[in-house]
Image 1 (cartoon, rainbow, N blue to C red):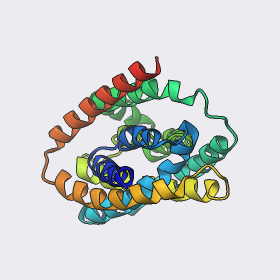
Image 2 (image 1 turned 30 degrees about the horizontal axis):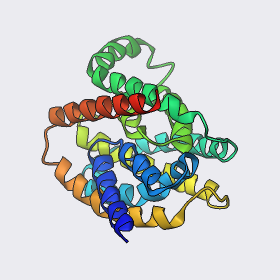
Image 3 (image 1 turned 180 degrees about the vertical axis):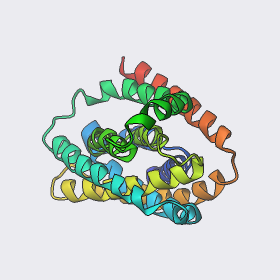
Image 4 (image 1 turned 180 degrees about the horizontal axis):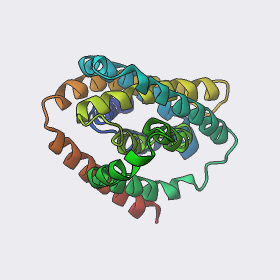
Length: 253
């Protein structure tokens, strides 16, 4: 009973973190391991945990979603296709060594997010002359395809990478970008669950308990994030990403 209560609380924190910046499963994944699940099962159970929180946080950001141009919905296509491929790869892997790569992937994503304003200005100047040949939205979509594969295979830290790529759109409001990230993550979770549900990888008991907490935390985190400045959110993302990547690197190596 105590283990289930701790899982519920961990799910709440996962939902909050994903709503504010992402990286919730960097906490949820170790919690599932502590519960007694294998690394592969904990990883496959992740989408069950994350999905309710992403839905409620997207609802919490609904005012910002209404302001988002409809053309950005096309970015869901590479995310969904990539997630389908990633989930299928996960289904056919032993999962013995994939944890070793996670710290470096997270550090890479945090670096992109930290220097995103400078990269955005640089690319904006150099892409303007080529915009008639290749639309920036197409380039971002191409970049999100491998992100989708990563999300379908191992979703921890996905939020950081999503924020980094979505930051190259013409939308500069961090809350609006967060809302787009949560919608994309929702669709990717649905795809992953669909692919993995027929396997024996998912632990439904642990996943559903954490999912309840995630749903509450997702909405709470979305409302809290809107009271925080864009700069503060960026700082929080960088700090959380660096700390969690360091922790995982020390644990794995």
